Image (cartoon, rainbow, N blue to C red):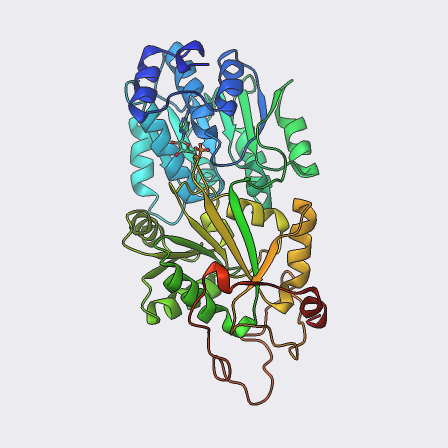
Length: 429
Ligand code: AMP
């Protein structure tokens, strides 16, 4: 199937052509005709599937079809993070290049003033995170009563982030005969409940198999002591000559600390997380994409939905509490036909988290270890629990300092890697 068979206007097809897209992706093939026909949509699609164009193109087309009246927002796209809002706005502008639409992004962490000015000037499409949008609603800065198309992007993440009440408040502001499009990578009971309340006889579309990881991603787990993770990571980056690495930590503090340490190791690194101002986050992402920064350390929330082309390496410096987040994290690599690796550094405290991930994936992740970084079997597990502050560095046997007794091996090539033996694994528990 070709793009010009989807019923899109010449202006949109021209913009698509300029992007170099040859054929629509599965989500685009399925979603675009339904959306153009005015149906509500419940779509299971992860980032990387082309879902943004899947809803943006028909949305632009429908706005074009009914131009009239004052310029109040007619389409609202809600996203969980500021970065995603900015990214989606970029897509709307790219695809709407030849359409007379005005778009804007609305999110917190930046001054509200310029946003208010822009709203007053008139806008057709608003891409927003829920909190700041609701502030504008409450202060009477924005009138959403003309919104006829409502998109919830990454709905599962929005619920994870506790946005459900804000979302419900916002929905009350919209006209009741609107079209609703809900996109989610996973379908929990909460998402189903939300979909049942929000959507009217929706077309259901599922493009990526639920909760499975991209086949192209090579996934490896390296059992290693907590206190030696940083050293091992620096070694892997150096020996492998990795030039663009996205590293995940569980906490903002952990992200900052790791970024600082890696910089001290001579590896240019920046961190991106919810505790940073928007300017710093945008800058970090731009520098990382441009190759000025080699490593970007991120928390799950900040990294969600980021579209970084050809990202070859994702590292789970710490495993996520929620197994689904692992799937989201490693979905950052092996995009658009590229291969990628996802490496997890797993300390004994995280054994249960790894097992939960393997259960979700319905398969084992291959264990490898680097000579010189063998786990110290005398260290007892202090299992990671959500909401509990972890001890820094972890218990260390007497007489050992970080990197003291066992130096890393010189080579970390495939030949040097050995299978992490079952006996070692069980003795470590
Ligand atoms: P998304 O899933 O919306 O984040 O899109 C992932 C990436 O796929 C983006 O970089 C898009 O520019 C790209 N993309 C979207 N549609 C197509 C297409 N039909 N052909 C090739 N690339 C596409």
